[in-house]
Image: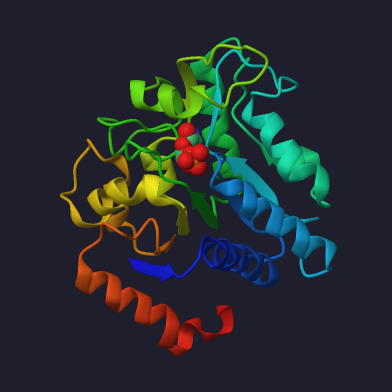
Length: 263
Ligand code: GLP
């Protein structure tokens, strides 16, 4: 695992955007796994800015999002489909037919989950999976105790997630407690994973994920088993990490030649 600690949030976001743009430059028909949440909003704004500057072409890219709320239609502003359309898809030249999210309105969540897995397989798998980190260590909506081998499925949200995301629900809508999410096994099959973690509120869980035991109580701890993961965080999110690790990973970002093109 590579951990990079950047001085400011903007640097962490810019670096993550560079990883995505580099992937598309080398592989114009790349398959991207995308995430939602507050952390990703400035990242999508950066991707849009790069697109507007002519630095990236999304016309052959395909995307698969991690998760969606059950019972929230695509045109409801609380759905993740709406989030993605608003923050990214409507602002770039991606073919809307090539943007996939689990359908939270599907009649049969099990059928929808199986179909989602089949779509990912048919696309050749995910080249680069973007991840955020939930305040309880979830990835996608894989809550604590999710099986490390889980696949795309219907699941029930943890209280911590309802607290974390409930505040974001608009128009007086109540946040659903059921969701569709890619499984941890699905996520772990991505060829490369880039996780972006910013802000003081994530410092404790980031330390648990990186330095604590591998445990189903912190689903993101499984990332130590993935052969190609980069975790990008800002100083605020790094505050509870081991002092030596912090100094070393900050130096890596400041001095290692391989990161020079990104600074
Ligand atoms: C949400 C999403 C995750 C996201 C995470 C962090 O609930 N399901 O995909 O990465 O929690 O969210 P935020 O960036 O708002 O802290």
